[in-house]
Amino acid sequence: MEKEITLNEHNKTEYPPMHTCEHVVNRTMVNLFGCGRAVSAHIERKKSKLDFALSECPSEAQIAEIEQVVNETLRKNLPVSMEFIPQEEAMKRFDMKRLPENASETVRVVHVGDYDECLCIGLHVENTSEIGTFKIISHDYKEGIFRMRFKLMPLA
Image (cartoon, rainbow, N blue to C red):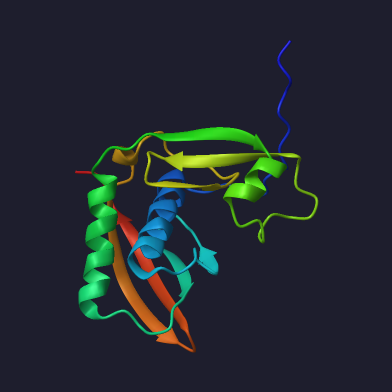
């Protein structure tokens, strides 16, 4: 008999395309700037924002590169899959700072193809082909925090 996996209850209903795109943006920022994942996020259907701790504001060329890399990644039609692992294993692979104290013993890892993996209990699309086009609509930099605001353009 298979053991049933119990995860913490989730009190938010994300818009799956935007939430999955957040994973791709986070990995892109880590890859391009060597920073950590976003220190703050507000992910909504119409527009979203992510804050990253950076030592300086990215140039306009770097902003364009973020957009380009994210969109190239989305167009790869990467499958989005889940893996369930014990917290003990997760501690060896992930930063556990954001995991709530009362987190379940089993945690869920979300994979976006071979591009990104992270702990997450939110809603996601099945494939990046469902996301649309990522567009940075504004950005600013203050006291070591780079904030980008973005939206998704509908699939053509």
